[in-house]
Structure formats: structure tokens, C-alpha cells
Image 1 (cartoon, rainbow, N blue to C red):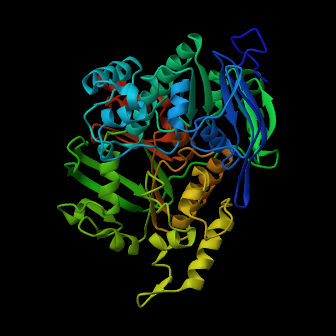
Image 2: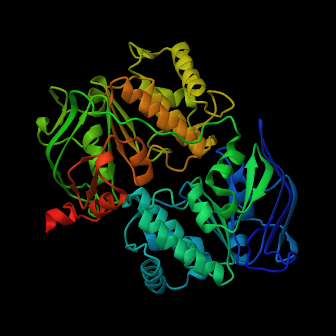
Image 3: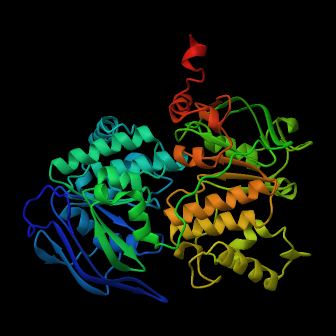
Length: 516
């Protein structure tokens, strides 16, 4: 099972799982799972959303208790009582959904994770600065988590593990919001950790990353181990088919569109951030046409949050004509009035922004779907609400027991499909989507991309803000990038390159020829 590991012995394992089983009401998350990893091995765990990957990792980290099976650590059977026990054993984990306290600083969050081992906060702050700079993920230790972008919060999670003396590092979708350059830097770090004897358990839906980084891989489907492979030999296509089956489309090419009349126009948008650490928007100008997708690339924290707030109505602007929907100036309108004019909005955070975690899917349908005849004279039409929720679940193949399941009970990819479906099925004239496929598996990503293209072809104007350059090149008709609150000129996707967009992301908006 271990493929290309650095260990020659097949009996010296850092971690062994034997027959691990976990049952939830209505769902067998893990069914007699076996897994082995040696010192210095980078081992991938693959599977579509809901396959049981995150549940398995949480049991290794002590967050969840297995219902059956055995865990062996360094050859001895162990019971991992809680995350504190796991950390003392030398296990660190980066969760897909952040486990950070928003009202505390970066240093305070990391100190909490280290517990009694945190020591002096001043010394810990210095360590955080050193580690974050060394690994190319610079952080300001005194910033509060609520002021950080999604990408910056991910950096906190990674650095929180790297300041520990760990023997096993578990990474659940660690590169979802990192730029290609940041991913490359992270991989250098991970290879060095492995060379020093640290074992790494790596969950990712980006199969090219798995192929490039991992020595071996185990595939889960429906909670069971269905196979293993050596990623470098199997290739991305073969691994994808092992994950989702031969009948699921895993990739496609989409024809580009020139679009029609302009629907969204932004004129000289300058805006101070409400966050003292945020980015100031500086004379932003762009247009999105009906029947086209405009993609905006950029490193986290360069003004994406501020731009999204200005477009959604969460931040009311000084001038109405700064943002226009067709011939209507909307800069002074609130989110509801903008939705009445045709806006659909997918925020960057699924839980807390896109959906209320504790509420059912049916109730979450009402959050933005209330304009679709679900509420009349202040009263909720329960039957219509249930029908709309069921249609989202059916049309977008959301894996859930039923519409009454809590949003937080869904896997990340299934919740994202629900949120995307909720917005698209309202037939918006303009859809603004932030990180539409962040952390979802390849099958779900393909489904979301197909839905966006179909909405585009129906005549909607679509703006996608993403840090996944490959995704933007796949679905966008035009591309631009944001850096330090400034927006580059846009180009047709077929007329630019990843290298040029990469330069835009660093603030170099002129081509080398133009600069000369």
C-alpha cells in the first residue's frame, strides 16, 4: 500500500489503522478502513466529497472516536482521547473548515493550539514570524482572525502546525486558497519535512498536486477503501476514475463567449476598507456582459472582500452610479434591493456567510430564496419552500439525508453545490461567485462549472473571483487580476497566459513589451 516510501522496511509503521469503523445516524462514514503510513512518507487520501476522508482524519486527531477498529502509533495500540493527546503524540492537523477563534489574534489562536507547550507569548510571536517567513506564508501575529481573508486564515492553520514538533502532519485541502507560487513553496516545505522523517497525510481534490507530491495514495468511496496506487504512475485521470467511477464526467472544455450587452458596470470605485488591515480599492473599473464570465484572479487579501462587499450591497457606496445593473445605478441600494434587480451572490465562506450552520437546508433556502414566492404577507409558504429545497438537492445531486438536515452536517462540496444551486435556480441576471469550487472534489467541481456555463449561455452576466488560476482559465471568457486594491486591464482568456495573469497578481499590469 505504501508505494514509493523512503522506508525500506514494510513493518515499521508510524501509523496503522485496522478496521476503523464510524457510524452516524443514516450514514456509515467509515467501513472497516485499513491504512498504513511510514516515517517520511507523503500519503494521499483520495475520494469524492462524503467518501469519509475527513471523518477518518478526525479520528486520527482525536476529534471523533471510532466505533470499531484499532489505531497503532509507532507499533503500539493507542486510544487517542482528544486533540491535546494527539498533539502530545506528535500529530498536527490542518482542517478544511477553519478551527479558529475570530475574536483572538493569530498568536493567541496558535497558543491555544499548543496548550501548555506554548510558553511565553512574546517568544511564540517571534517563532510565528520566523516560521511564516521561512515557509513563504507571512503573517502578522497581532492581527485578529476576523480581519483575515480566507487565504490568510488557511496560512494560520498551516503555521499553527509547523511551529509544533510533529511526527505526523495531516493536511485536509491545504492548498484550496493558495496561489500556484504559494503551493510550490508549501510543497518545498512538505518535502523537507518528509526528508527529515515527518509523515504527511495529504487530502486534496487537486490530483495534479497529489501526483507531483505524494509517494502513495489510498482511495475511499462510500466509506470503504476501494484501492491504492502510486500517483506518479497512475496519473490524474486514472485516480479521478478510481474516486468517482467510470460514469462520472471529470473534466471538459467549454467554448468561449463574447457576450452581449453590458449588465454590470463598475466606474471609478474607490473605497476604504472597514478593516484597518484590509485593502483600499483604488479606481476600480470593469464591465461584465450578458452571456459572459469575467474571472478575477488575485492573492488573498488584495481587495477581493472589499470588492465583493461593494457589489453585494453589504457596503453602501458614496455614489449611486459607481455600480450599475444595466441602466440602473445601485451603489446606494441595500442587498435586498439589488437581489430584486437580479443579483445572485455566492460568498467566499460557506458556513456562516453562505449558510447558517445550525439551520436546516430548507430554512437556508429562505435566506436568499425568499423573493421566489416563498414568503407572502410576512408568512412563509412551507410547501413551496420544501419544493424549492428539494429541487436544489435533486438538480445539483446534493448528498444529504433530506431537506431537514443541518447545513453543517454536509460535506464541504455538497454544501457548496447546495449554495450554488440555490442562487442559480433563482435565474439571476447577474451572478457574483467567490471561490465557487473551493475544497470540492473533481466531480462536484465539474458539476458546478457546467452549471455556471449553462447559466452564462442563458444570458446571465457572471463574475467569478477565485484564487484557482486553472479554474479561471477553464470557465472564464475574459480575465483580469486584483493586486493591492487595483484591478488590471482585462483580456480575452484565449489572448493571455498563466504567466501574464501571474504578473498581474503581483501588480505588474503591463506586458514586458509595453513596459519597454
